[in-house]
Amino acid sequence: MATLSQWVAGSRPRTLPTSLVPVVVGTGVAAGEDHAVWWRAVLAGCVALILQIGVNYSNDYSDGVRGTDEERVGPLRLVGSKVAKPKQVLAAALGSFLVAAVAGLVLAAVTTWWLLLVGALAILAAWFYTGGKNPYGYRALGEISVFVFFGLVAVVGTTYVQVEGLPWEAWAAAVPIGLLACALLVANNLRDIPTDRESGKRTLAVVLGDRWTRVLYAACAALPFMVVLALAAPHPWALIALLAAPLSIPPTQKVLNGAMGPALIPVLGETGRLQIAYGVLLAIGLAL
Figure (cartoon, rainbow, N blue to C red):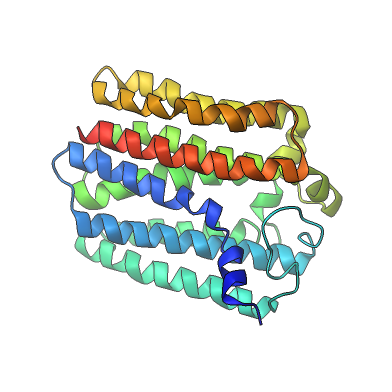
């Protein structure tokens, strides 16, 4: 039986900002529209956070039973390291999905039942990323899914449950947030290219190769600041997000200078901090 600290490590805490930052930004858009509903924002945050934990446990289970995590560098894998039984990790994943679904049901009840379809698609995307017979995460489609669900769906969805509308600012703000979420995944998959290639896990990093994956990371870290410049015309306060730009330099330098294996682990934390700072500042700018 895994210890509590091992279960926490298995939830991959460094990835959790990916789920909360979009909620903060979506709420910033809603506040700018004078329609922020804080209890709905908090509930949306719970849905996103618990769903992300479910994704991480689901990936741990699916990769673990396939044997692709046995030689993995990076955070603890519960199944791959054999500190927890596969059925326990599966139960944790399914339990997380259930809790997220119940919280989402409340939001759907007070807005529109169409949100149930969005929620169902999110859970299916979470499971089939590495689960099932033909996981799309093994087919170089992970970054597309992350951009859609941790960018477009999360930001626009959070705005919608408060505003009950779809302002263009929500779609525009979702783009840089989705790109920063992709940067986290790209850094993770860059680190794992050797083991993923050996185990037959065909991520986008494996397809692109080491050099172009590093270029992709740099692009995902830089483009969000260009989007801010585009937002500045109608929303000048959005420019305060540029204050986060210095945080993009250390991880980008590490990636472009050829860091490999364990040397890429700090990049995940640095990218997470970049995403948090950028998201909070952009939310404030859009709210103002």
